[in-house]
Image (cartoon, rainbow, N blue to C red; front, side, top):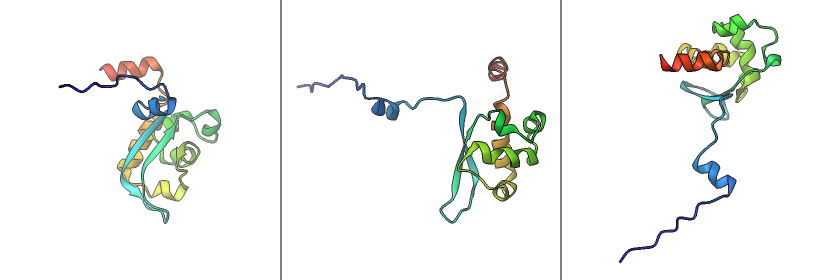
Length: 120
């Protein structure tokens, strides 16, 4: 005896999102090897969104693309979640800062450059 299975697919957007989350290329999640300590709990990952021109004021594009610490200290509080204080940024583990900085710098690549980089 076999059981009948229900093959009806859900059309509820919330259920679909839970099954297959939408991928937004303008938002990246960066896990931290060394969590940032806060009284409200450790930060184990940062959500980085692609900076718009306003988030880049006061820094040069070249400095951000070169993962300059001072430039990241200025830009990261404007584009990451949770919002980091400058003191938290300068106290990050260098490997974590490099990962976050590389993620920010990757937003400056054109689509053609990204695909060429991924295929090589």
